[in-house]
Image (tube, rainbow over all chains, first blue to last red; front, side, top):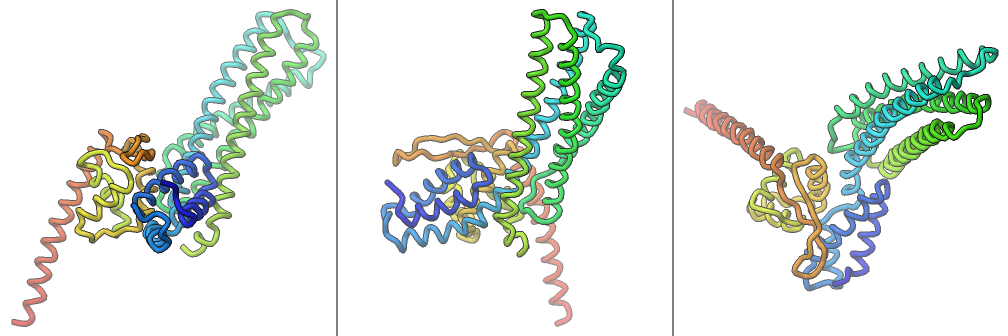
Length: 238
Length: 112
C-alpha cells in the first residue's frame, strides 16, 4: 500500500524538520510511514481519514524538536571520543617517530638553534594542553544527561561541549603542524633511505587523524547551527 | 505530568513482549482505559531515547502486510529500570493515597 499525497507531504515535512540528522531522518520517516499506514488502515487515499491520522500524530516540528537534544548530545559525544582516540594515536605516532629519529641519528642541525628549540617546545606544550583540555572535555561531555527539551541550560551545556572540543583540537592541530614541519626539516638533511618511509607514513597518518577531527567538528557545529535555526521560534516560545 | 512519566509508560507497554510503535500506542491507550491519549508522534522520540539509553532493543521485521516495521523490545536493563520505577511509583501512590485520605477526613471535620 502506497501512502497518499497528504501523507507523503506530511512525511516530507517531517524529513525536512529532521534534516539536522540525515540518518535519523530516514529512519523516522520509514517508521512514521508505517505508523500512518497502520492508522489509516484500509481507507488509504480517503482525505478525511488521512488528515485525522496525521492530526493524531502531531505537529512535525514538535516531533523533530524532541529528537534534537539526543542527536546533538550524541554528536558531541562522538567528537569527544574521537578527540581522545586521536590524542592517544598521535602520542603513539610521535613517540614512535622520536625513537626512530634517535635510532637513525636524524637530528636537527645545531645551527638551526631557533627551530630546534622553539619547534619541539610548541609541539610538546601544544600536545600537553590538548591532552589536559581533552580529558576534561571528555569527562564533562560524558557526564551530561540528555534533556527532553533544548531549553537554556541544556543548550549552554551543548555549546560548552563544542567549545571544549575546539579548545582541544586547536593546540592538537598546532602540535601536529609543528611536528610535521620539524619532520620535513629532518628529512631535508637526512640521507636518502627507505627508512624515511616509516616516519613519513606516520606523519601522513597524523594528518589523516587531524582531517577526521575537522570533519567531525564541522559536522557538530553545522548540526548545532541547523537545530538552532530550525527551532529558533520554538525555543523563543519556551 | 504525563510527559514526566512517558518513559515508564512506554517501558510498561513493552513489558509483555516486543511491539512496534503503533502497537505500543494502542497498548497504552487500552491499558489506561483511554485516559492516556497522547499525541501519537511523541512515542517515537521516547522509543528512540530509550533505545539509545540501552533500555530497549529494536530491529526491522517484515509485518503481516509485507511492510518493514521496526519492532522494540525491553533489554535486561530496561526490565530492571521498569521494576525500579514501578516500585518508586507504588510507594508514591501509597503515600499520596494516605495523604488524600487524611485530607478528606480533615475537610469533613469542620462540618461536625
